[in-house]
Image (cartoon, rainbow, N blue to C red; front, side, top):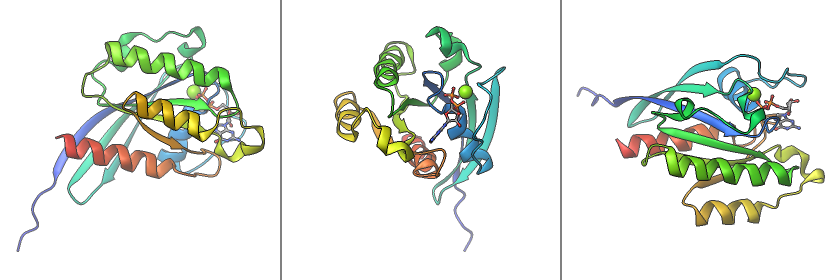
Length: 175
Ligand code: GDP
Ligand code: MG
């Protein structure tokens, strides 16, 4: 019997969060399977594509990484316009980055696509000795605001593939 053709979904995914939280590192871990310790702060816009195959669908991610504009705490709405998924990243060793993450979430809720699949990610989970934001705080905030939450590490790869698979599954379900 012929296998039923799965859905093909193309989805724009954007990353938001303070500079230095590890957005680019998470993308590079996912797309290239590597971690670069002394990476230059993002210079120039970056665009990546990656395909994930689930049983029910094939998801082609168009991933938009910031070009360092987050330094000024602003991103043009054009950056996240049309996005199907957003990953808001903070660094769990920085309370300031968590506070900023909440502002990005608010902005997306106000101006993003109403069906946006949103994940809050506490990155740098490998630096637990320097932790400033507890897992409970992140989880609680995410729950109250209807986001999914994960602690991850671009360095050790903890939860990085899981993050993108979870997003893919939600996108497949929503189609
Ligand atoms: P971006 O500005 O949000 O894109 O952040 P980058 O990906 O450029 O990362 C900023 C710095 O944090 C770089 O020096 C990275 O090597 C480091 N970094 C990123 N992710 C992790 C992580 O999971 N663990 C640790 N220990 N360092 C990380
Ligand atoms: Mg970057």
